[in-house]
Length: 237
Ligand SMILES: [Ca+2]
Image (spheres, rainbow, N blue to C red):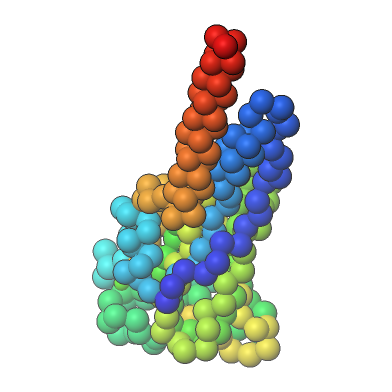
């Protein structure tokens, strides 16, 4: 799928008032506001996600030849920890994604599970196999001890096997999975991709805004030169 429309908030933008360069100031303020606009997108096409993100770390769980359970505490993996109701499931699999070892969560009857990453992220993507679950993306403790910042909630859809990607210019480190709360729900997760930086691809609208600002600057300078030339001619006369 194509990415969704940016959804995060836009900081307040006010153009400074100036008698001499009001047009220039307005254009440059518009450009700066465009650059500061938050970019939060969801992806359901893995190739599009990877093109937008660039280099990612990937947890395939394939290093585990046998099942792993948390034993009442959080299960510690290379890039993140998971809640005790998670299980690394080696083949044979109860719920499959690509035939390899994966992670399963039991979300039955109001159950939930989360992944907390070891470092702040700007992007995460994964394959999921489940009936519909809700994925909450949040920053937990990144803004100070005990802080919590909810970024968005994603729906895995009802198709079963699906790719979900998420990118943001706001950092996050926690994914929480929850079912509908009504029934049995076991989900599988594999190929968890994460990145702390995004590929430096400028938004087209930002480029247009910068071009508009530059054009206005050049036009303003031209007007000043012509005005100065006309003034000099009048004085000479
Ligand atoms: Ca795997």
